[in-house]
Length: 414
Image (tube, rainbow, N blue to C red):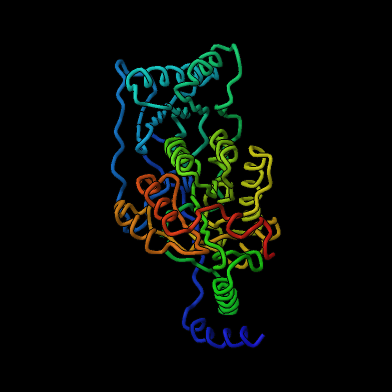
């Protein structure tokens, strides 16, 4: 009790000097000539000051496949994966057509580039397409080279195939703005009293480690473990590359999944579970929660929980607020849904594309017992440095694991 009182006294001046932040304001829809109005969050912009990632190489098919607008590929040092985006006209969107065009892209991509281990395809409605993060695809498929015959039989109506999504979920409008911001610091939205209380809780949690009052800032120092986490999953090009690397390194991680991405690419979420990883909640639309009404916040969390659990058959225990933006409301609603709000200790800024050497040096410099590493599953430089980082961790005697593995159980300390 004395230690808590002393800590409050020490933090009081800091709390007064640091005013509460203003919640984010909604952004009106943006329109462009010849296209349907875009909704907030259809395209997630880069963080201020971030460098754009290098353009991915494109695979050109000759003659071109009608509707195929992009066919990118990338490797992880061991395998290569391609992802094609197909845009169909509203009068050409039958399920048979979606399946057929996807099969054509897969067959011709595998034939054109023998080094490809897998081809993934996302088929969208051309009129409403807003990029990754916009309205859901009409159809998606993941086809490893050794499953091409299975996919061909599925398209021909002969048998089922377990690595497809056939879009039946109606589109939903995000309840607020989806904006990419730097995740180099946590942002707490509240009044001076709320801020003081939160600073106390955060300081105690960071000193002691473990879950306190439904929050997790870091693990304890007694065990040589650190949590490896990835935000914004799953991405149709990067997910198989990332999962392949983790399998090769024998490392388990926690993926904070965006609900709409889980719906569109359910087979990657199943892959995570089958390979021993953990799946957490990153909201349904990747929206900033402070400033939204209670029912909108609750829907973002509960809908993501439901989307994940419907795929995995397991409850969700951990939640990470997009951008690190949170408030007393966020914490209250998350805890009411049985979620531990989980932050991080180490953010190397992989989404800012500072260069693989910079990301690696930051990861190594901050590696510690009880740490929580924040990476992004769709950041190219996370793929580039992951194998080397996991080896450094092993050399230092730090075992990289899931958030649940870090704290010992899903409900430790609650």
